[in-house]
View 1 (tube, rainbow, N blue to C red):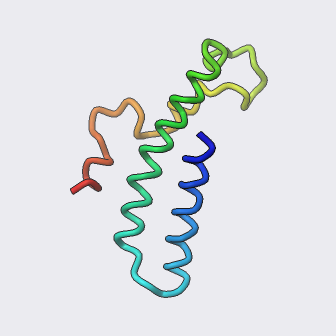
View 2: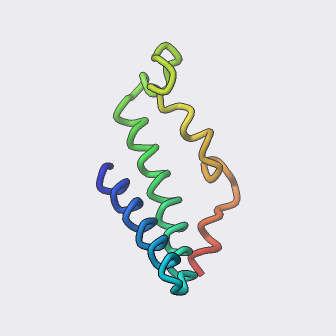
Length: 88
């Protein structure tokens, strides 16, 4: 899980560096969007699996439960797959 998060961070930083250098980053930004969308979904699913039932518990302190994360991620539960546009 940490590896995916680190990979997402590095891809975003590299794309931002390209933009700062004045280089075109259209392809890179599309790749970052696709990868980060899918990796974030996987990380959220893994976190819920790790926490089991406690991941959905409202008894934990604010910010400690992960049940809110899928609701906050707009790509979750949507019938339309926004990443499918980036795959073409």
